[in-house]
Length: 173
Image (tube, rainbow, N blue to C red):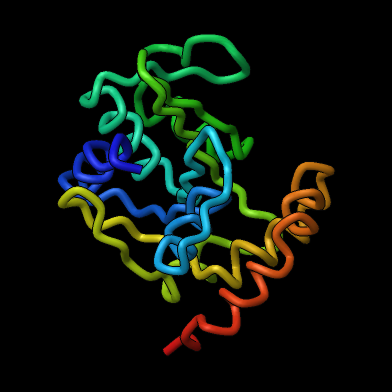
């Protein structure tokens, strides 16, 4: 997760609204319990806000990440007009570096809107960066709602660990 910290700081400098979701988000909840789930990417959930998406792209570029969509370079100019088209289509942007950082900028979280998840986020401090993370309950429910084979496999494989972690999760305030 350390390699995500510079991007998290770049997001914070630009006031990008986001929450970490997916397996990488679950890992932060599980870290204190000594459980680690395998994943290769970081899933960043953004609100359907073109200006915020544009700021996220700019933060990625400032960190030297390459932006792609559908395995092709993200179009240029990367401006508000392009961001508006992405928001309309709920497009996915991938941000990658030459090492191992892989970040998916998504405008969709199965079963939830951004505004449902945002107020209940929690923060984890990693390498000096404060990272907003969706509640584990939201992450697990979203994986169940997505219904993809890989999500069903993840939930089935880690059912006991997830149940224990969810029992320890503090209720929303």
